[in-house]
Length: 217
Image 1 (spheres, helix red, strand yellow):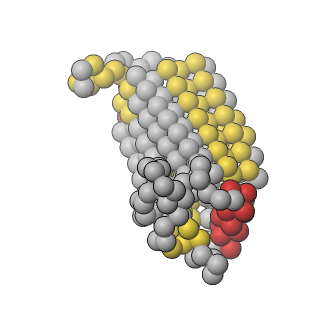
Image 2 (spheres, rainbow, N blue to C red):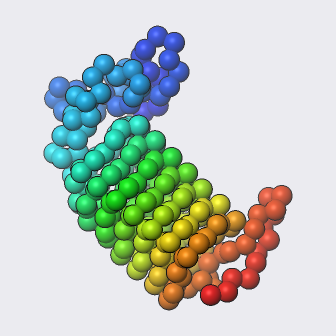
Image 3 (tube, one colour):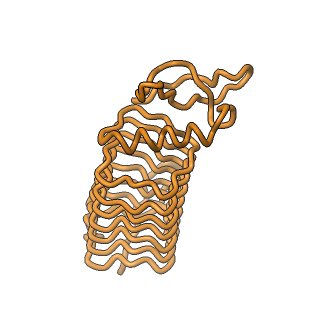
């Protein structure tokens, strides 16, 4: 997993992002948060180069960075932190992540086809015009997400959580949603066609007690 350490700037209590050495390796050396980093543009390019030259990325903390037009095809991320990041115009296939955090990140105009994302968290994230078609998205936290004009079609969402998610013009067609929780979701023009809705969990959480409702197509 990524290292949790505080920013080296005096008085700052924000978490530091990963330091990448001149040799191109992630180290535990003290560093700055995204706000106090001396040269953000140079650091961002260093991170991009690291991702470009490594197929397997372990323990990267890039919280707050903007990823635009970055190719994540066949990249594998393990125990990484991408909280509050922005991902835009990403055109990738077979993107893989395990035990990584994307909480409160923004995804816009991305094709993440046939991704394999497991045991990861996207809590509070925003998805706008995103294609996850044909992906394995099991055991993930999608609680509180907002999804606009996005597609999860033909994907495996087994045992994931969409509690209090806001789904607008979103397609969840032909998906495995067995044991997937959709408590207190807000939906508008959502298609569930051919998905196994009877094996998913819909309803309301009242006082912490599950009050399952009846879902009708």
